[in-house]
Length: 112
Length: 114
Image (cartoon, rainbow over all chains, first blue to last red; front, side):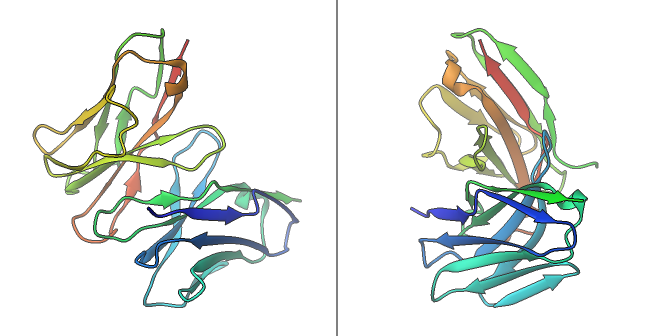
């Protein structure tokens, strides 16, 4: 079955710097790749997603890139702010069933 | 409709007891999913429903776990004979039929087995 690996597990940056989180997936049939932000004690919230027919997607300070050949995708956050501090999860799915396979998460800390 | 609702928010139970959690999806969502999240891990898929039909249950962790969605609206997840290893956050999500439109998680039920 699908396996998603996520790196790094923790990331600390200074406010205003950029942060990059990387994920790889194993199933070449996967075609949907969302990123979730989860604050302590709260539900995962979708921040951006990308489908396999697109190589890059951007939404203000957040961007996601997808390399289907290499089977990896990345989250880029620019101009980080303290409120970006949270755990970020990548996920992958083949879409037919709708269940998501998640990575183990990256704890991002943005220091003022 | 304020989103996916889960009850209770917290549940403490003694080992060996049965517990049941409820999930109310967004009203127009036909698909409903259950996940388990342990500390420091990403959510782990358990099962999902398309309306009242349970279309995938092979990922349920053991035969102590079962889920229902009798009328295609709310769903329940039951754990029988709870064990300490069942302590986790149980998340529900719902979505529209096609693709991942509107895929939304609830706030979860945190289970502690003592």
